[in-house]
Image 1 (cartoon, rainbow, N blue to C red):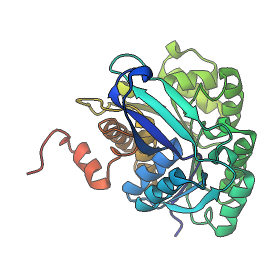
Image 2: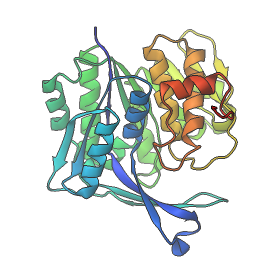
Image 3: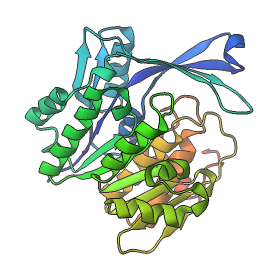
Image 4: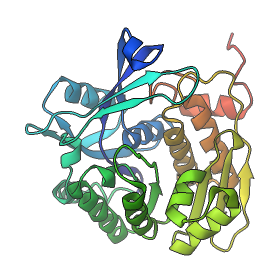
Length: 326
């Protein structure tokens, strides 16, 4: 029986400020493994799914750190190439108690940005796609380079040949490309996938509608593009989904006492949703899993630390997120 998920993108190292302050006043940085697609891969693995990751890392210490982290989380890394000609990408971000945190990227011409259709072809030759049911992509990868964009298209073609479900989390990164360029590319990709996942502002960019139109109108516009299911991440408002020919579903968010680190919440959301659907859960249940995984991810520092195991997810869904285990 076929099983498993394939994710693909750039895994990089994130250096996060140790204290809450603007960059000029930061005194120390803590290193973490990061990257949206890798976050989803680890989130899925912790929930019991078999996951393969396709990407490139540099032949350097950070690349080694990434491979160790992925292997330690039982992610199949046979599709990860160690690239001697490109360094591992680095993201540096500050932490602020009020207002948005600044992010600095050192990923231009990185190993991850050198991902190409040849990497996908190698994964196909290894049988990676033949053993999978789901391909998950994000809008970050096609923003990195033309070869990355071509790799995304190659992965979609490979998934179609195997009858896999394909999902796209828009994951807009304005530091990587303009809204105008992103809208064109993401609309094209959105028309080619089965499930499109987005925040309201991201859905607005892809559909051309204003955020004020609301989740229902945004979801309907997404479905008109071609996907069979539109999923909207509403943050504290929970999750919203609309399937072709179906009724709208909205599930409330899981309350979070203290947000320690908001980065990675959307990736946790995607991991929870995909895992639930792979297990045959209905859309309301999948949204509940998604909300719980997103909430858990913001309760720990770093992109991946808070992603729950299946046991932890069940405790959260049971309402025991604030109780001590004695």
